[in-house]
Image (cartoon, rainbow, N blue to C red; front, side):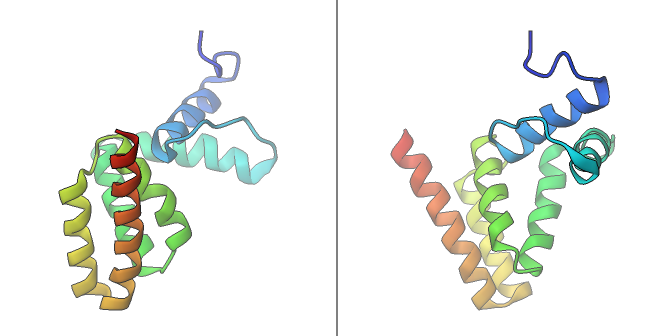
Length: 125
């Protein structure tokens, strides 16, 4: 029995997908913002046909780089790596692409997150 089995299906599906996407344990929350995040964004949008989780993650990482959202990149990049969606080589290629399309300083910030992610995973092995 899963920890979310007692919740309505939309809530359960959303929380399970959030755990997959973020790479850490989620707990149920309160309020409309949390409800829309769980039930709509993760329970529906992240599960629509047409794009894989990896595809969505790549698109999201690209948008986050452009927005200079390094705090969220610090969640998405390690989660993509831990889930096997992006390996060391793929992450480093994204950095090179980001440097050329979004500027070297911003790509350098992304590189720091990528290299920290790779180093932590290597130490854990």
